[in-house]
Length: 384
Image 1 (cartoon, one colour):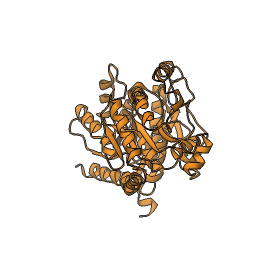
Image 2 (spheres, one colour; image 1 turned 180 degrees about the horizontal axis):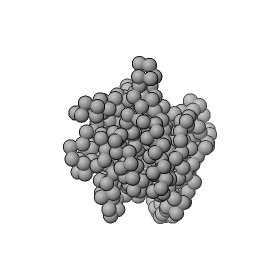
Image 3 (cartoon, one colour; image 1 turned 30 degrees about the horizontal axis):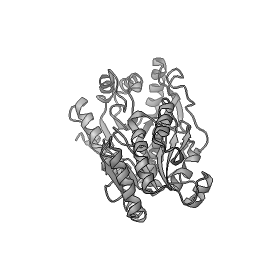
Image 4 (cartoon, helix red, strand yellow; image 1 turned 90 degrees about the vertical axis):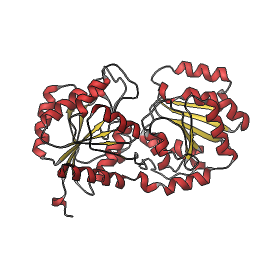
């Protein structure tokens, strides 16, 4: 198909240099969609007001996610800006608009843009239908936006079910979150990575990665550590990510449990170029979540061919195959977490699970996402 025959998509969402998983996702998705569509990217000139998001929102460290030609137009808090942005999008005359959706904060902005761009079919990519941390009015705000969609992509059955609570008979597909392999910048070995993070070669590393939030269940894997280290004193838990609050209570828990020698904390935002050494060094990625829809951390782990232990919440059991690419355990149960970690090392599952992650590669490919978008655009065109 020649370039002129390809349908036109406007992609709306965060991209480099914005931080975080949604930005990485939008960048990867956009690059791959360009194989089959003509894609123009519209991002934010102001994503969150500093009053709401006090940390630095941009990371210029790794431009591998950079999308050439991105226009940073949207001020999410300025209705007059939405009008001028909509006019500029209309001049692009897209066949479809894809909007990244993950939090009701964007509801006024996305509602305004959707109303101003009413004639253009919109596909909402739902990272979460409802936010992880619920609050009053979130359902109303979410419905206000998503009811304006022509089609939807979800990454878990839980999100698909939530979607159907607010949109009558939605046209949607549920597909697994594709793998992030763009963080594998240097292809360093486990030994090299351990040297970089100054961990002795004999240590076995469990990795808890990402922003620390209560729902992510860090307390539960901490409670599991005494049993784990009683089995093997060379097992360490590395907690790598930014504590927004409550760090002191975690430190008190570590001291009370007597596991200080077996827990390493790297507090702070990890730039893209710094991610590789932690995943390359670890033996196992742990997600002891109390609730979730899905998690990009699993896809980063799979990009490094690392097995995962996850709790049985949201869509995580749809991507972590119990006994094959990792283990699934009940939430809120440190004993079950400890048993799974011990079983992994006692039965020497690393090689087997790593091979199974490789075999699942196409299931988590961005090419598969292209197929999903292609099917949805055809259904929109045919009014199916």
